[in-house]
Length: 209
Image 1 (cartoon, rainbow, N blue to C red):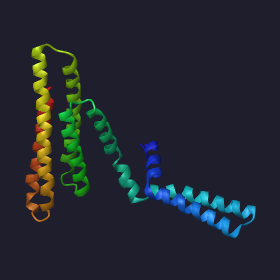
Image 2 (image 1 turned 45 degrees about the vertical axis):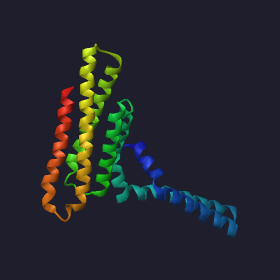
Image 3 (image 1 turned 180 degrees about the horizontal axis):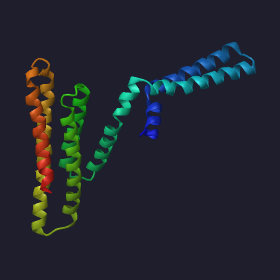
Image 4 (image 1 turned 120 degrees about the vertical axis):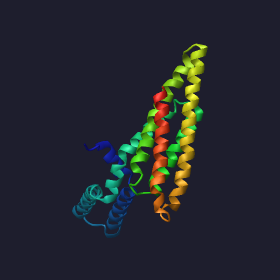
């Protein structure tokens, strides 16, 4: 289903949209100022400019750049939701999670191949789920519980922080190895296993709560 508000936002924020508006406005102003045409011709030129501006979104919607941008929308919306969720998490967890998120984005941009995309997607979704668990547990830890319950919750919270920090370390290693992948294609399987290990650790901690 088409996301109309997001489509409109893409069109309005696309760099060439502003350029198109400025170009039409300058040409309209230049023509009218230089030639000083009669009102009907001037009105016709303005109408032509409006028509060109209406054609621009149609051309943009058919472009490869728009399709790529539109396909990223669900992920970008999820990223914003995760960033908002992390505001309610503990500071150590939030810091490491944001670093993981930034590193995932860098890997996606630098490594366009689909080879590891499914595992990278799983890392993101596991991080999202773990962040939700951490947020809820952290809220309970701050408000409720006996001393024993507080200790248990604190231990679980620390486990979650450690898991994200371990994931961050592994992602940094993975990101560094990507530069060597072209020269050593046989490392595909090992690197894929590294990503699976990250996902497995995140899932194990998620199941602890």
